[in-house]
Every structure is written in C-alpha cells, then in structure tokens.
Image (cartoon, rainbow, N blue to C red):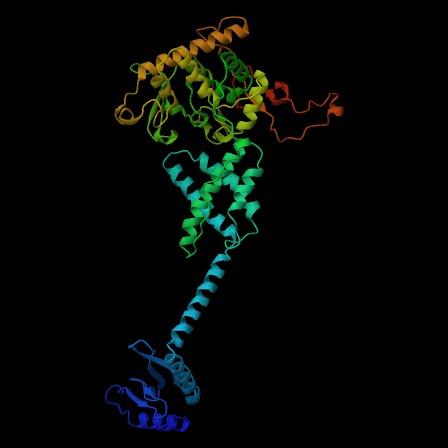
Length: 491
C-alpha cells in the first residue's frame, strides 16, 4: 500500500471509529510498500492524530535511526515522502542529513545568541560594576571600615572610563583601548589610578559576562609607560620638614592634620578618620596614645600609636568642630558637615607654596620620618613598626610569622627622638627655641579656607600684576586665613 492523501483520510477515519472508550488508543504503524522505512503512526492518546515516520541506517553505521517527519494533516504525504527519500539517499552515501541540519541549526542559534549577548552596551556592564562597588561600600560602612578607595574608583569611572567607552558594546570592545588611554594620560599618579580602576572593571566584567554565557579575555594587567614611572624614593630634608610644619600653621584644621601626620608618621587616610573616641590622652599605663580600629588600617588589625607631647598639645588645642545638625563633630579633623577632609591636591599645593618647596606629597612624610630615624641609628625593625605595614620587609620568613611584639616602648622612644629633631629644626628656622610647654599651641585656633585650584582667575592686567607663568602661586594666593580671637562655629 502506498501512503497518499486518500490513504491518510481512510486511516484516520478507521482509527477514530475503532478507538472506543475503554482506555488509551494503542500505537499502530502502517508502513509504505514503495519506500521501505517510511510510514505513518497513530498516536496513543488522540485517535485522529497521525505522524509520518522514517527509520533508516547510515552507511557504515549499524545503528538504526528513527525520526518523525511531521504530523498529518499539517504535513502532506507527498512532502513527507520527498523528505524521507532525501534522507535515505544521503544515508546511502554515508551522510546523516538530519544530523547535519541539526548541527547547522544549533550553530546558527548559538551565533545568534552570541550576537545578541555581545551586543550588550558597555554602559550596562559599568552600571552593574558600580552597583557591586556601592554594595561593597555599604558593607564597609556597616562594619565601620573606610571606603575611600572604592569611592575614588567610582569617581574615576564616571570621569574617565564611562565617557571613553559610552558608545561601545561588549562584542565590539577592544580591551587594548584601555592601555591606549593610560598611555595618553599625563602624570604618573593619574596613570596608576586609571590602571587600578581598569583592572577592577576587567576582573568584574569577566565574571559578569561568564554568567551570561560570554567568554571575555579582557586584559587585567595594564602597563604604566616608563616615562611616567618615577621611583617612590623622595623624602624631605629636616629643613623641609620644619618648613612644612611652619607652613601648616596657616592652614587651619587641615594644617593641624598635616602636623599630626608629621608627629605620628600616619597615613593621611588614618588621620582623616581619627575620632575623639579613639584618643586615650590620659592613659596612666601606656601613656597618651591613639587606638586605630581594624577597619581604619590597611592590614585590618587594631593598632595603637604613641602620642608625644606636641601631639597631645595639638589635640587639646584643636577645638571640636561645630555642625549645624548634630552639634560637635566626632571627627577630630572634620570638614564641613562632619565629613572627612578632602581636596588633598589643594592642600598639598598650598603646603608646598607656603613652605617654598618645589615638590613632594603628604605620603612622603612617612618616608621622611622612618628614613631620618634610620639615619640616626634606630633599628629598622623598630621604625618600620611606625608604618603599620602588614608584613615589614625587615621581618622576612619565620620572623614575620612569629614576631608579634608591639615594641611599644621602642616606638614611643623613636617618635620622641623624631619630635626632638623636628622641633630643633623648627626653632632654628624661627630664630628661637620651640616652647617645650606649649609647643607653639598657645594662640587661639583659627580656621582657614583654601581656594580651589579649579576656580577661575582674573586676567593679570586687571589685577595690575604680571602673570606668573607656570610657577607656584604665593601662599597668600592659596590660603585665606580667618583669624579668630576665640573658637567660633568654623568655616
């Protein structure tokens, strides 16, 4: 019997009439006599439903394959026969036509899926990265830890990365472009900052895209051009350190923070987050000291810092800052609204201008303290403790693992020795010895405003002055000191 349209009509009528209501319809197959392996099969449940089927073997393969070609009446018997004939002819030549078509369909589907996924706009990826960083900031805030680094990464992303990549998609993005941006950046510090944010974004992008089935081999290590790399070996001389101490006196609360860094060799971020509750100025056992919480220190361990006499005098002299909402600020060196002091570039610029020093950073203060102490015979293992590093270079191997002495008395003695050297030099520059009772903190505290570097300047001819070219401005051009006879609410 040759399966045709009339045959299918007769079969479905006969199967429907004999279905009955006593259980499911039995599966039945009618095979075509003209094309071996081609047939029509009745389904188990629906009496009138029938499907065209084909069983065949591929040359060289003993396995029998069974495939459904379509359902009647959606597929005409002649069309099903032609499809079955093509499959059998290919099988006779050793080809599995259905498998080939399935592979082509799968490859097309994968290509389309990859195209769709690769078309993800890069701003979407950057939004996801920002969300993850903001979540990290929230976790750190809950744990009382600093998130200054994360906030700086967000600022750099918004200022540099997003405008640079705004029109790209994941599929069209070339990671080498990030290296090009670093190469074109002026300044070593800016290049390092961009490299850090690029590495963080690339690390996040790799995991984020893999979750969406996209493999992205983005560069995660970027190079700083050699012409931008300068050794981190700059230190101030004792004269320059004394000049910085004197110049800081005109910078109000910001200058007090700089002086505190000079006395303790702490990081600026640590002094920036110093709170009144962290100070123990009347401790009879350990002496005056500052107790830094684990979240404030890079190595995430509680650290105590001895305070010398001028440090205690500075902290007692500096009045708490008043805020409109909450009264006294809990930060010792508080900015407006009890926010940590910022605008470090402006502070550094004003400090160098006031001290008449050509170059240097606030971080160079730490290097200056420990290097000077080492020059005066102090053991590196002692002075390195002042830096609060997780693993000192002077304590390698087993010593780094087992040496857990705080070396408290040695650290205090080292800071006292440094203080003596600094104050002797300050006295020489001022032409009179520093009063060892007041340490110079005998006048009422005066706030000061530092003009922002981005502020527009009037033309030189309108001020009646000649343009200074590229030289540093005078201290008066950067510092606007507001002297106060007594403590007021602050600038």
